[in-house]
Length: 295
Image 1 (cartoon, rainbow, N blue to C red):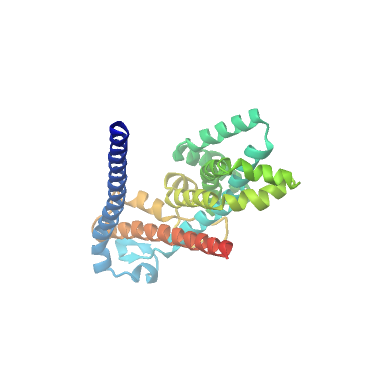
Image 2 (cartoon, one colour):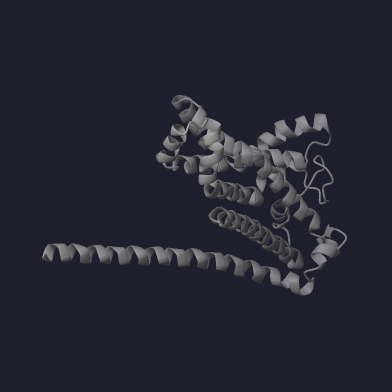
């Protein structure tokens, strides 16, 4: 009895220690996020105070040396490049995960997954360099000038497919085997099982993979800086050169001073706002789907 009570006591102490450690780490992560937001607001405040928030949307163009701070073309360039890459990469990543799990032979599946993991580890500057010397000239032959929104979308698609595919594959691998056996017992075809059982069961994991891919595409700097042309204008079609918010920060932060520097921090604050907006939209969609499924 003494031994069992001591074991229970030691387990409860271990549980309390683990619980306290997890809570401390969660508080540290939340505190770090608050510190980042506070730093961005602090560094952006001189521009918001001297320039005003609405001038970032109403000024004629982005010429900080001439007191003009229009950010709208770069916001649209960021949104279109990110949205285009996510729309292309999401079905390709999810279908790749389904192929790897349900259609490919075991040896091919293992090597295919290793290749995708290798693709996920390639630095972004390598993707950008490949796009600059291979993809941009190909697009330029088709429709000059070459550096364009389309080049940025294709490069970002290549970069986020591994993230979406690997998260989707992990989600599919955790589907209970009983679900698959039940589908087979009911005589469902492989695609019917995937459509009616696998995808609904793993939709939260699939959405998580898409969100991770979106966050990477939204924050990517070097690759889009190298292939998009860095022209500050709102794109009217896929072949227009663009400049994203991240590329603008990377290009100009080294020599920016005063209100110009603070305006670049406003760009960072807007980027964080876009991330929060996209994540909130995805969470709202997920909760809506969950509510509909439970009714």
